[in-house]
Image: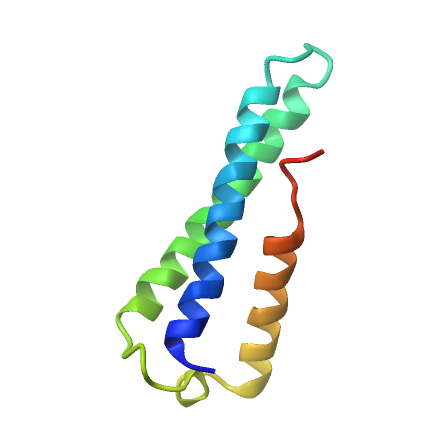
Length: 95
């Protein structure tokens, strides 16, 4: 997998997290009974977003045409791809 493809997947996951953060922040005002849960979830998502942003910064320093396997082991890459897939498909803004 090329670094460029990895960056695209990462960008999709980051976009999904941003939507989820905004959604959870807005839902804080729905009910006083659930506001804490939505606020807490928004904070957790923001921490995940910060981590992914750091990863994106590091990946953007690499040559986009190079293979990701040159920098990461197969196991690391596989685990990272699974994480990105989970984040992209989580749709945490829906709940």
